Length: 113
Length: 116
Image 1 (cartoon, rainbow over the protein chains, first blue to last red):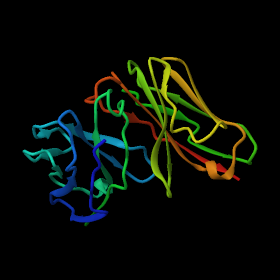
Image 2 (cartoon, rainbow over the protein chains, first blue to last red):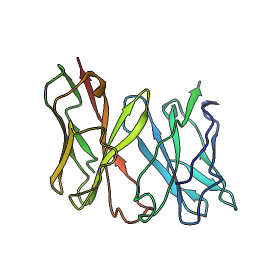
Image 3 (cartoon, each protein chain N blue to C red):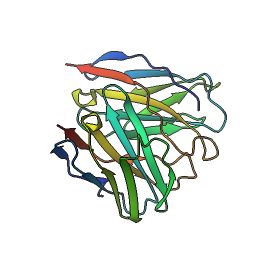
């Protein structure tokens, strides 16, 4: 499976957009990019995923570069409740990693008032 | 909608005791995953099931750990005998269609296990 690289920590001002980068330079054509977050003492929460195109849902936007070697998760208006560890995960088809999610260390996002 | 339900939320027991963790997946999901989270090792997959059948248990640390899924709405993770190094937060997750990597897994809130 392709590995991902994320900065260990980031700060963001409340109300501003939070842009969390992820590098996945070894991603293959059939692997999806997934984002999860984990708020303290809770289980990981699914945010968004994508293959090639940019994606948007009620929580966030996912921007994937044309070469698919990196992506950015955007929280358009960060709130204090968005303080969490954010995980970028590359996930392949059943013939590869059989659906496993392999969590790295993630990025700790601290939203400050 | 009810999410993945895990019980108990907290468990404190003495080493050597049997521990049973329970999970109810989201209705309609046919894949179920057990994870363990520690400070040292982060989140790691222990075992997963598809249509109640164990598919990959390579993450199970040793024979003291066992997992079952007797039906589509219930799974257990058992540790016997338990040891202090088993102390961790154990998460259960479920998803539809294991064979498709575009189906997200949804996690429960975990069981915080402390072995004294």
